[in-house]
Length: 113
Length: 113
Image (cartoon, rainbow over all chains, first blue to last red; front, side, top):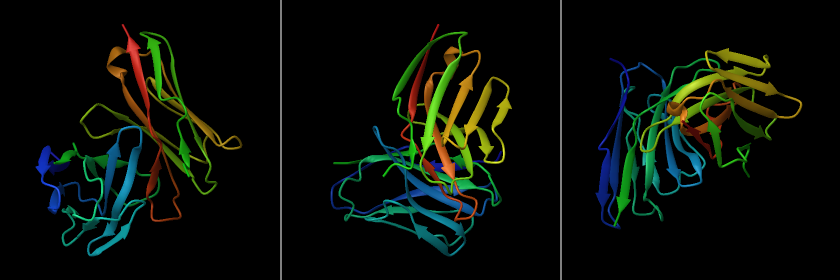
């Protein structure tokens, strides 16, 4: 049963703490993505990775970091430098090739207190 | 600078009637377009896509129309069902780049029974 998992569904952290969001996929997709959703803002790209050990900044990468040590995993760290970390975070993966769609995980709601 | 615009934040339609969701884009490099459906607190799910070599693509109750000269696309849902009530995101990508897509801010569709 292939898919993308994100854990946990809800996450609470104190201001000033770093937090890492998990994203795992067993679809054998090369490309993976992290988005952030805020009310009225749609989906904004944070980081993306086309292949293992390579990743690029998206439109709003400041205050975030990622790693891609394994094909299946693309964790996102929200650092204390991110000024407004409270948001809904979505991970996606995509099979390499023209016009292929992204498959999304269920999302993690991060609340920083 | 929004490269993908969904100018209607919400739309209400009677069950059984047609729903038309619109999307405009500004980047001439975009050559494929996708529609996603999203329920609250869940990840988006892919609905339908179209490449720039076509002007129409149909899948069951869903049809996407592309007008390249106007840089406009629309999603038609016929007939609309209460289960179609969700937020619909338009997305656009360029096959020549890193294959990332840009999302609009979404249109909330409510289908009234």
